[in-house]
Length: 253
Image (cartoon, rainbow, N blue to C red):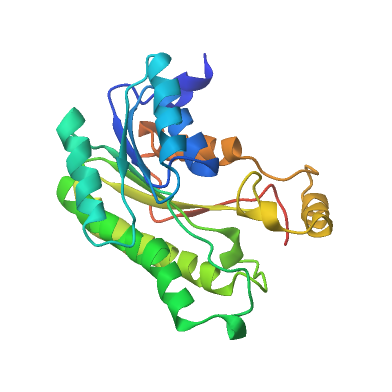
């Protein structure tokens, strides 16, 4: 049995938002390797990375498309789905990965503009993608949204980011009930500190402390998260919905 036999996605079509780098890129690579055709949404400043990713996977015989779109813009969600349907005629899997961290600062130091910007991408963006999914995702489809362990283990400089990810969890719980009538499963993955990723900016001492808090003695990698997403996107996950999977290597912080 090969690694991909466990979660084969042959014949499936996936959408991954924010798929050009870090966790998003790993998810795109993992789903494509499992046999899915993948539409990669990329946001501002990541076009070159998205094009390079698509080119690399295409050269390996994978079917990959890219579509630009700022998730905070109301028309982006529809454009992503429409481009996917135009290319492949269907969409079976939605991975809501696109997000922004915003300034790493205390709540008292952030402006309402910062709050609105973070929620517009991280929470409203997922809300809009879910609305499109209800109309355009195939029956028995899969929705996986990337939340964060910061919703369980607060970080003093990521308060609004954590709140936006808590909103993603709440939306997912409710949408699991609504979409279940069509056989669609809806789950979230809550990564702990992953490198490369937003944790790159943490001071070395903090990175070391988090690393030592895991019984595995290391930080997470994008591939660690991508493997979980691939399972939740597969047929084998059909009896799992409305759940939040904490993926932090057993860390208690």
